[in-house]
Amino acid sequence: MNQLIINKTKASFIEKFQEQPVIFRSPGRVNILGEHTDYNEGFVLPAAIDKNIYIAISKRKDNSINLYATDFDENFKGDITNVKKSNTQWANYILGVVDQLQKKGHVLTGFNAVVDGDVPIGAGLSSSAALECVTIFALNELFELGLNRLSLVPLAQKAEHVFAGVHCGIMDQFASMFGKQDHVIKLDCRSLEYEYVPFKLDGYKILLLNTNVKHNLAASEYNTRRLQCEKGVSIIRQHHPDVKSLRDVTLDMLKQFVEPIEPLVYQRCKYVVQENRRLLEACEDLARGDIKSLGAKMYQTHYGLRYFYDVSCKELDFLVEYVKNIPSVAGARMMGGGFGGCTINLVQEDAIEKLVKDISFAYKEAMNLPLTAYIASIENGTGICT
Ligand code: GLA
Image 1 (cartoon, protein in one colour):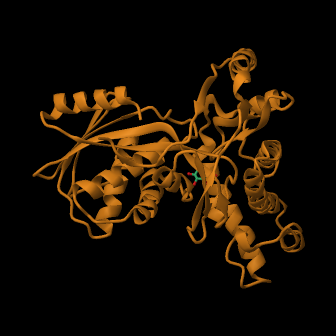
Image 2 (cartoon, rainbow, N blue to C red; image 1 turned 60 degrees about the horizontal axis):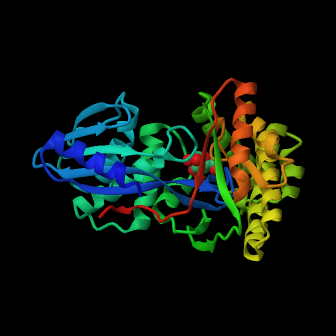
């Protein structure tokens, strides 16, 4: 939690609305392994981090929705009886959640809210999921809707589908809601069963390197990948009607039925099937504390995302290539949806300072862009700020 941001958010709320708010927070996330597997009913291994979106909020007696986003220094006004997608992107995440609650039959009045945070936007750390989660958690408390944490997750995800147009899986919202300090979440995206796996790194830290790019392709290509995976499943179902998703598919099935007629779809599906298997093995690495073996799998994941799933970009590739032969780096890969954002690196703590200095210089030389580095610690999920 960042007390400075909490104080600032509270002060700006009081100044705007002349009353005391309640403040909630939701974290961004990292994902150790299991990328683009969530919407294929596979496994993911995310964790909530020490960067949050905060919302200061109070109920109104009338129907007005009054929002203010500190980051953009922008106000938004709406009406609770007429919630629709707006041209204000950040407000859509909040409105999308309201829309989902209303569709479930919950009756809300207007509210005032100020949002702020330190999850970098567009960095692949799920600032949007954090905003959806903090909003739905806050509204559930404020209006005493009585929904449990688990039932909030798919509503927040659906808000992203409908109001942001990205057909995301469930990983980001789940991690933001269910994060647990010093643990990663092994989540089965088919059953939503989950297990907290201790994340002990013995001298290693999670270092995030932000490319500071977000290519426009991100949303449209994401949705295309989803469709390509569904296409692969539909081809296999003609021969194996019991197959429901790529979770049920083997490499042999892909080779036999998909590769001959849809070579591109084959590449995409192959990556997903391999990634699921890799994740299960990575959990064994974690249990043994075998950081080297885990790190090697992260490089393999990057390779798959770059060449088979085709969601990387030159900036991400540069960062992964740079660290690949540095002994103090156990593993690295692009993280999240792709086409920009961060790489996640497991780095020996005492080597971080020099690495960041060197790689920032090299990145600037090669890409003419600044690099931003964060050391991420693993923290608890969404909650109230006391
Ligand atoms: C984005 C989506 C997630 C997930 C990742 C890729 O972060 O929101 O649901 O699909 O991409 O693993």
